Length: 338
Image 1 (spheres, rainbow, N blue to C red):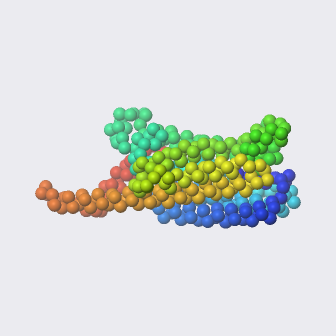
Image 2 (image 1 turned 30 degrees about the vertical axis):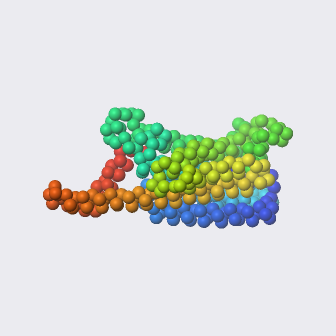
Image 3 (image 1 turned 90 degrees about the horizontal axis):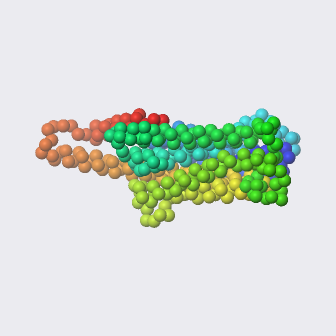
């Protein structure tokens, strides 16, 4: 969200304390995310969530450590240090990873429960896919998932160009780019040249894209939690709505001016990270209840076949039924175009 410049002001003691607390919170979030994705089977195929999401939290941890220690860096005029450049590049990967993560989580929960999502009908079956032809769910899944990845790639390129001033030959650079929020663009008295504002806008565009996509995906998750979740909630105010709070916090953190923008932007991203972790907890609970209900249906099948007069000695066991269900799930995964 921010980067260090030789012309920037040194952080105050309060800001150093806040950056230290934020870095510690991001480190705990990274550990929790890695533990949860490693111990839950349904995340093992989501490599973005399993590996890149904890990596994004580690990147936020390093960024806040660098901001807390930016005083000596500014005094020594070392904003072009190679290690700092590496942090600038890693910082540009945060928003793309968060974008792909929230989409993959939303896609996962809708697919596993066969709930309609973005025009995709996961319960249409093989006959329905043959009828739909090129407009079937596998093709739509391929388009949407790779579209999000392409948008994330554009956000990565934009972030790197803004952080490293790669367009300095084509565009005049603004020293506040990456260190101020949208208030800079609204303050006409201090926005002297529109050309400088373009550089500031480039640094804010990736987060704006994440906010737009997160708003839509948060509504989809809220609708799922209210209508389709295995865990029935008493009202529409359920934990599936938490990503909307994270999106709102991230939006508010992008509005401040340069003095407090480094703190507010990272604080908003921390709240957004926590809401994603809460979302993962709800997904785990939902999948656990699905497994319990599936096991109940298996017991019903076994009992029904045991007392059936048409039972010709066919061996119905829990293991065989479970293996059959696993094969069906793997066949569906193989048929889906990734």
